[in-house]
Structure formats: C-alpha cells, structure tokens
Image 1 (tube, rainbow, N blue to C red):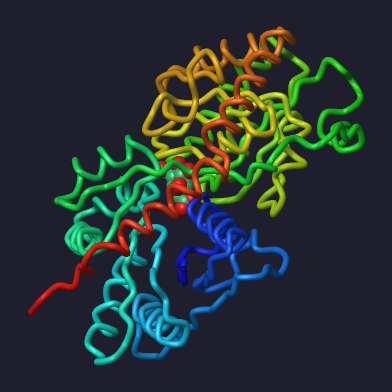
Image 2 (cartoon, rainbow, N blue to C red):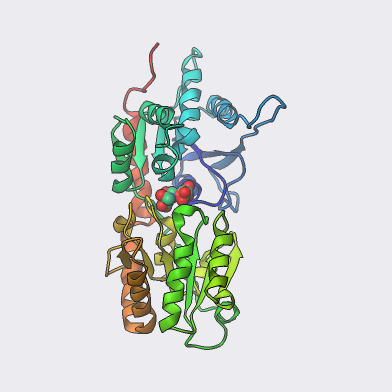
Length: 387
Ligand code: GMT
C-alpha cells in the first residue's frame, strides 16, 4: 500500500506512535511517506520504503498566525498526486483530520486523479482537551466524521469521543504499541552512579512527560516527598520540558528537595535513562493511553499512576503496576514504597509488566491490526461529502 502518515514532529506520544507505525509498515513492504513540519525525532536512519516530506508554512505580514492547515492540505495534495497515495493517515485530529479532508476534497475535484482514503487516529488531547473546546468542537467533529476510517488508542478515548463530540462515525480501538525490541539496556553502572551515586540503597525514581498541566508534575514532587520520608536516599529524575517544569522545580525547592531532584530537560533517547531507574511516577489528570507508562514497563520499571482514561487498559492494577485516584497521593506513595523496599515484589511486577508489553503491545501484535483496518477501509466506498 502507499500510505501518507501525517503527524506532529515534536516530542510527544502521537508523533512517536505515528513514526513507529511508519517504520513498521515500511519494514513490512509498504511505501510510507511521513508528512510533518520537521523530521520526527525518532526517524534516525534511512529506511527502505520510508520517505519524509516537510511541510513549509510561509508567513506573511497580513497573517497573525502561520496558515499550517492550508500548507499541510496543499502538501498532502501534492504528495498524493505524485505518489498515488492509497491512504492518508492523520495522527491527532487537530488540524490533521481537517487537512486530510480538505486534500481529499481537492483531489476528488480533479478529474482523472486518484483519491486517497482518509483515516484519522485520535490520540487523546485532540478530543479531551482541544477538540472538545467550543472553539474547535464543530470542525473537529465534522472532520473526524468525514474520515473514511477512525481509530482511537483506547476504549476510554473512544467513549470520551462519543461523550464529548457529536461524532457518529464508528471508532475502532487500536492500542498504541512499541517496537518489540524496545527493552531495558544491560547494567550501566556509570550512568546509574551519575544519577543515583554509589550508595546501593539509593532508589531512582523517574518521570518523563511534556510537563503540561494535565501531567500534574507538582504531584510527582509531592509523591516523591512522601516516598523520601520512608526511603530517605531516593532521588528523582525529571525528563522532558514544558510549561510546568519550573513550577515542579520550585515545589521541590520549597520542600527542601532541590538536591534530590534532577531535571534533564528534553532527551531524544529515554531508554538509557529508564534502564537505570527503579520506579516511574505518572499521576496525570488525564491520559488517553499513557505511552510513557508502556515505555517504562518495557524497560522493567514499575509504574505507579492515576486510574484515569486509558491507563487501566495498559496497567493491570496490582499485577503489572499500580493505579490510584489522581488525588490520592498517599496511596501512590505507599505503592511506590512497597515496590522500592521489597525486591521480590519489584521483580514480580516488572516481569509481569514486560510480559504484558510483549504479549499485547508490541508491533507484531498491533501493526497487523492497522494493516487489516487499512484493507477494510480501502474495500469500502470513499466518504466524499456531496454538495
Ligand atoms: O499528552 C499530550 O497532551 C500529547 C499527546 C501526544 O501527542 O503525545 O498525548 C496523547 O497521546 C499519546 C499517544 O497516543 C497518549 O499516550 C497520551 O496518553 C495522550 N495524552 C493524554 O491523553 C493527556
């Protein structure tokens, strides 16, 4: 199949999943074209079957904002015409589903041109935060509905979409996934010592996110404070950047934890860091899936997280990790302390977590679901609005 995959290039789960899908499809013999403002950060090496097309969005003094929706739609038309795309797969509805819809309408209006089918994958905040905002809800719902196929990364997100937007399209759930080779690296005492020092009693806790309010990073600090009261030598590594990083660091200083908390900013490679960590905290307010939790589980780092959104579909509470109400910081700290102070318990949870990732969330299990979905959509009539 000829597939155009549209995604955001910046650090973030939707861009990572789109990029991993593009790589996995190319490895399985499909011709894939990634379309984004910049090369997504996890496309490292050239790959047979995978090409990248940059969307340029020229400014003009009259425009207050860059006209990304129009330039993306324009690029989709050009790439589709040139490479005879069968499918445009838009990851993150806003504004990608709208650009794909517009491109398809333009191509349908050009006699003799192949018209691609449009698939939209909903990732979370494109529905729960932005899409459902009344400034975007009408266009978001329309463009999702006008797609020839719609997927969501969890059952929870599918249900949220029907609840929050007037969407009538059938939404198929295809969970996020990781490369089957995504795993904990072998012992790296130098890196471990860099963050945890030489004391074998030290426990290294990690949080990786985009530090947006929805991640509740001050709760990460508050949970860490509670953990430190019972595991005094523990340390916290903050990985990523975003609007709430400063607030989190300030909170750490207020609690006298500045020495025990280290912020590394954005990191292209998180596996080496996860591979020296003992526990992952994710007390998010909302999480449609929680790809960061899945990455930690694959690296045998147990996750203590909020029982929200799609996280219960990823973490089997008490078996592959621990879930608590987002405000119950005491319970999160207790689960964390139990894991950090009982090596047998820690090992049982990490082994169960790794087994779950390999069985349910690795590319070999999920990519065929996308391929099958593409085939089913291609076999159907295209959803071209009349008028
Ligand atoms: O967290 C965000 O706001 C960004 C967004 C993204 O593009 O990375 O994350 C969402 O999509 C991820 C990939 O499907 C999911 O793993 C995240 O849970 C989801 N974030 C939220 O629902 C808050």
